[in-house]
Amino acid sequence: MSLEGRTALVTGAGSGIGRACAHRLAAAGARVFVADVNGDAAAKAASEVGGTPVVVDLSDPGFLAAWRDQVGGEISADIVVNNAGFQHVAPIEEFPPEVFSKILRVMVEAPFLLVRAVLPGMYERGWGRIVNISSVHGLRASPYKSAYVTAKHGLEGLSKVIALEGAAHGVTSNCINPAYVRTPLVENQIADQARAHGISEDEVVEQIMLQPAAVKRLIEPDEVAEMVAYLCGPQGSFITGVSIPLDGGWSAR
Image (cartoon, rainbow, N blue to C red; front, side, top):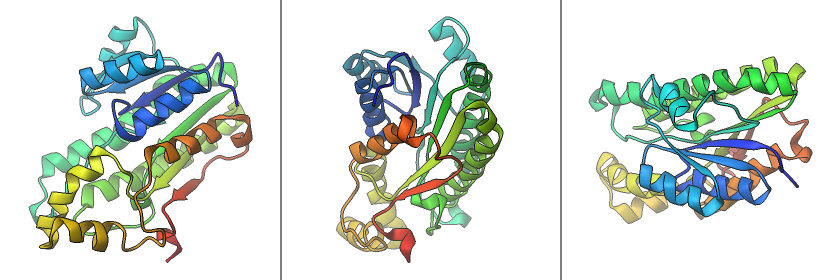
């Protein structure tokens, strides 16, 4: 598979799934813009792939202006990987409303604004790939994750609308739905889960994270990145408007 001559934007690309996607797309020949709220992480990941770092806070409604300032013009891409996100674990009655809103801004509104910015160029060129890193929580719910589950369900709907509108212009849009991936985001929430459920951190991994899946292990970021690459390559040209579970059998229940 070759993505020579293509430009890719990956959000949350300073670590975890986003970093793995940046590496995989660059290996296929794409020029990659590595976007992350952490400037050091963005710079490091970009240097690893010969890409361009972009330091933006997707919770800021004006993030597109900051992005344009850094790239020196309009935002253009052939591939967009909407990956950035964060988690907060708490019962609904204790969930901070400002955190709920921020999660939706980062994980639903920012993907909408970014796709809205790049679609005209994709339409003009007659080719584009939107890959949304959703979650098994875009298909199933779990307690104590009201904002995250809501955001991922919203991203699923947005992805389908992009697919329907973009099909006539050579643009596909899909969601990838992993279960728990071995990333800092997952590792950082183990303690929160333990407090919310009243169990130990070891029990969180065994009883909460791995219990619903048939395959009892965490997913590696490279496995998600490989599916991203497949959807962006010629083999994925007829796949659009769908959600692809990488959940070890979780959603089979």
